[in-house]
Image (cartoon, rainbow, N blue to C red; front, side):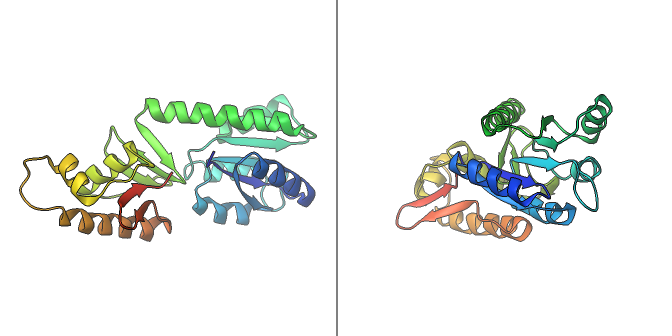
Length: 224
């Protein structure tokens, strides 16, 4: 699947059970027990957050309102109580759904899968794709990390767009130069190496992650 789930709950047993279950389902899982840990885990680029309402220090509703402008992924509240006012406050804070404790793991999986599918459809329809917290807006020709734009030149974005649209496939420098610059372009494929180096540097500086992979002896590809 490749999706990243952040599980934020102060109950250690619940975190462990949910983490083991979601890991078996193929998700990458990060854990947090309080608001401070949630904030620090946001840099890992979760695709969905399970957020307990009753956490120490700052409850989930307040925390959701605080972090919503930094993350666009679905947020599902975990709660032992659910009143109409709770729902209203949660949706106003930017939450997407509730699941009431105790819950079945099968129901949890179904809710998560439904929200991830919906989020993916919305991103595709808007021309925006998300990769471990990085958003590539193809229509707007912008790249952003947690709402902050990372600036790229026209050719740098052309390379990002090409690799993203063909993610998982490997292209050597000559083929990339031909397809991006055009078969009649003057120059040589060495510019691809320099542009990729600059792209990697900008992405690593802001996100701390690698998105373009070098397959030695073969070429480059966008990591799935």
